[in-house]
Length: 479
Image 1 (cartoon, one colour):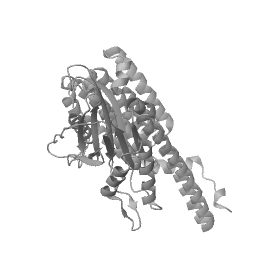
Image 2 (spheres, rainbow, N blue to C red):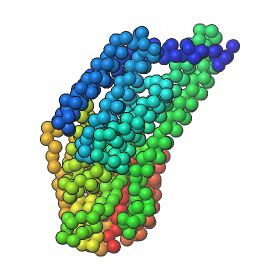
Image 3 (tube, rainbow, N blue to C red):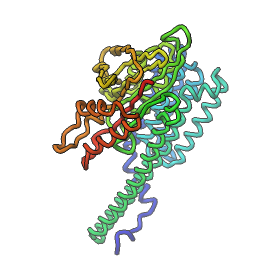
Image 4 (cartoon, rainbow, N blue to C red):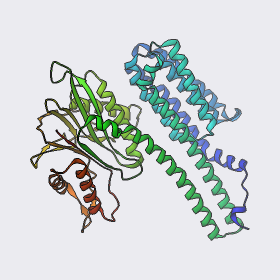
């Protein structure tokens, strides 16, 4: 008899699933109850005038969940009903809190709401209809509370964090579904393997079965990551926008994995920073988030979002102030609900503001310098030796650099992926000196030719060696 012919009933799988996950889900439920009460501290800091009302709502949700948890063995659905009730209650609770906030407080509370769905996506395993009901209830409760309590309209809701929250909630639905299906398949496979060993001990057939299951899991995981790539690329400035912003430029962007920890961002602002009259300022940033692949991609989403916010902040008028804003918000976001050691993930970034009419440049950097080539002479504008998201007792302000540009100047922003690539005849790093030599050599070529040359030299150096890190190099010519 082949192990593939062994029949495992759905009830056997469900029983094993419940037995294997009940303790974990019970702990997760208890942690959620406690954290929901602890987060009243955040309510007090963000919105002290309504803190007591919010605490009553939080206490009601947490205590009622604790009551159901104590009776979980007598309730249909057991621990899954308790978890469902807790996540649903916190979501409706957050919707109510949102509806009482103005736009500024609304933004500040957005990431607490997002944390709920990210936490659920990472910790909860249940059937998809639980997630669908919570998603629908979230939409309805936000719509009703906004209509009844808030002076904000739907467009204000979406712009100030609602759309991002809905997107994360929808992503969590698919994440939970994918993890649940993978876990069910894994349990079913484990039971089949156990029975096959007991009955037949046919090692060869077992290996074939496991290989097939692994391939199926990898296919599903890769499909999810490829979908995440589509989301990440949608956040990068499209070629049409870059063409509108910069007359002569190139972008060499080559992730190590399907998704990337490197990203670039660009926009145009109308400001009175340099003159009394309205002036067009063009912003361009290149960032390298902690790690690469999926962890780096999550950080890039956070960095991209805060950069967009900084461009709208009236108190942010220089690249250095933008990095201060980014740094403060990244530190707060990653550590606002952390009870253990603080999260030390972050990013290195260079941010440039260019006023083409007066040929004025401002720059600030977190560990990432920029290069300016003038008549084949390399000028280095150095960065501050601190990363975005670095945790210290006091956040240090970033330094703002002013620079007068000339026609023909070449500006280069980059991450460390190019210079850190291993390869060559001795398998060593390419290093920044060789990278600088490449830039000087191509200074008189067109920007597209420069990109092609840098890419070909990178691949030539890498050879058959695996790509070390994500690579992002942006060049801009002053015309």
